[in-house]
Length: 219
Image (cartoon, rainbow, N blue to C red; front, side, top):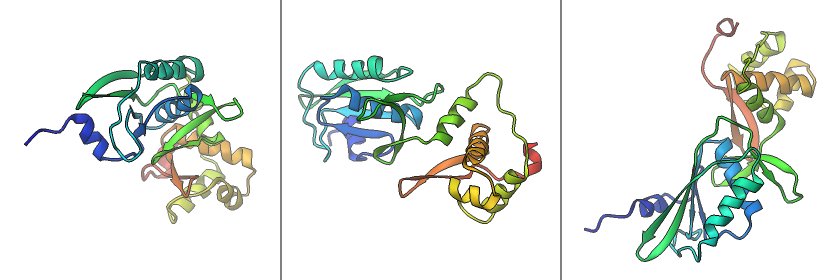
């Protein structure tokens, strides 16, 4: 029995959070959003020359690589690095683009109005990151670290999350009797120190405990 090519094994998985198929690349700005989303989330692979249904069509020319290079160098801020590999699958060339998860978040790319926004990867889609995530990344990677004060709103938040799976920023504002900006700052602090993580529910960004920790251990 003929052994399957590693790329064929990947294709059989279908598109998911770390894998995307492209029949062709015709818009560097648009593909830059995918580079941003992979870098800002868990990394991933882009297979060019593969249709949405998994059929290998092959790339048409070297232009595909240069479109990716333009997306990386011209349309991601800061630049999203990538590794490119060409694979011959039964006489058809598939271009594999690998993007590693970044420690230099947020990476931004132009939206439809050419405004630079950060994206995250959710299943097989790219969605906009919100202000909480943007702030959390900035805090997580700054050299001086993040100082968190265990305030009444933080205690209220963890009490709530002891009984519920996750919380929205609107719910947090309501139960803790705080404004949006205070809630945003607290949530981003907690994500930055890995006490919270974000989850996507029906394309909404919500927040949950990353691990079971007593409040006293966070002091």
